[in-house]
Length: 450
Image (cartoon, rainbow, N blue to C red; front, top):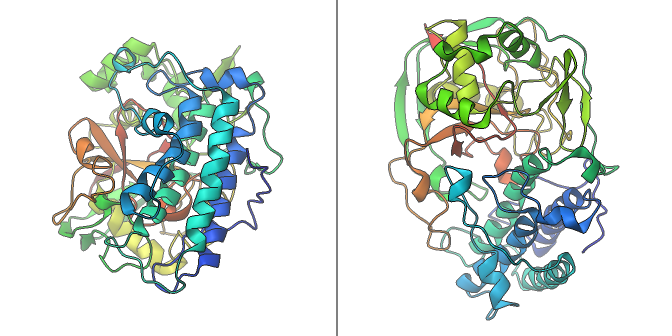
């Protein structure tokens, strides 16, 4: 295990450019990527914790500890940048993640390697990736047909799992973890500000990442779709814990009439009575961060799954709904013009600026005006769209099952990134998807036709 020296304010999380990149750029980015993941796992107090399933819909943590390392080896071999792997068993065992619809449909593995064995494997992978980077010809142009695309794929995949694994850590008993010193939470300022409605004029948007864009992208980001977006209204801020608390305390959270049939079935199956990261304590709620329970930050955005978001919309009135991808993009394009690309700007709570959400609107300067807050960063925005390919979508041969198996009515889209989204995960083109009952660092805002 590599000792972490990461500092969230000095380690680069900005992705390298595909043109003009040097081996020094790639090495710096790889070291930051690797150390970020190692820092997260360094919080585990006992090796037995690696074999727990914090979420019954996911593998034990030991899988994710080995998975990101094995991914590098498998993809570098596919691209011809290395000739052989390290451990055939590990490179098969740790190759593919899971996405079952129910816990009983998770394929369970009874015998995992020891933590020490996986640590040793990771150390070897670390050295191999560095040796591959040392062979990079400076200023080589990288595109989707280049073998070096597989290296970029490994780097960004590693960063994806920093974010998704941090959600798993939130579901462990807090006594099993110790928060790293480098992990700094955002402040809380008390009750959330009033959440005003903003009217958005009709407009045209073009979805999709240009094929010649300067940074890496996953296959589902590419393609082009132009849409006409009718006028609509949306809340300036993400829905806060304070706002959602009213929904819970009035008993509306437990009223079937506000839920979709699918959502109500999920709620009953798991016996949900409040959002997962709220912790009931006597007559109040605490809030679960990645590592521990703290006093409820009422001004932070609520984090819910899509079913809970839709139920809140229904409670507010039948006209309320989640935003669409096109509506989100219409707003986001304007925000990007004002504040810059979130993958490179320090104006948003992405790229691990904080190790938590922040008060709604905290990163913005226009809290009294008609500009939207937290369109990028803080927490993801659940959307009304099912995950779908853009016209012109093409599977990348080095990762054929990254997106395509999930283009269906069971996976809803999210946009905007969260505090834990780093690298190209913080890009405005990044398109995320999850099952509606699954939890991420994700919230929502209200929208309606206007």
